[in-house]
Length: 96
Picture 1 (tube, rainbow, N blue to C red):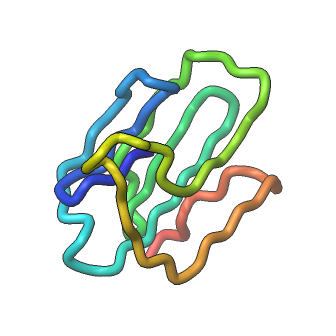
Picture 2: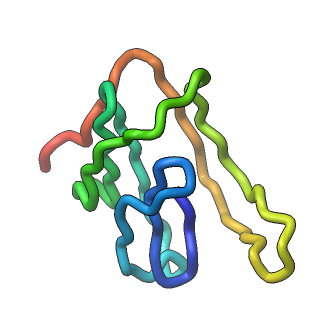
């Protein structure tokens, strides 16, 4: 997932699978990523915003957090309250 001031982009390696236009800078948001087999679901503030099939196979499953660009103007900054990771299964947000 890539974050920009006006949208987020969901990628399968370098293939764009979905984009969500939203203001990512105006307020605090809760992001959740849940993956079961090849299905990735993305939630923003408790609502599912994308459900995509990942088709690019990789040997190692990873979750990376941070800025991996060395291109000028492509770097990001973020305020993170907390980050949680679980291998106990994909957990969707609870219904209100």
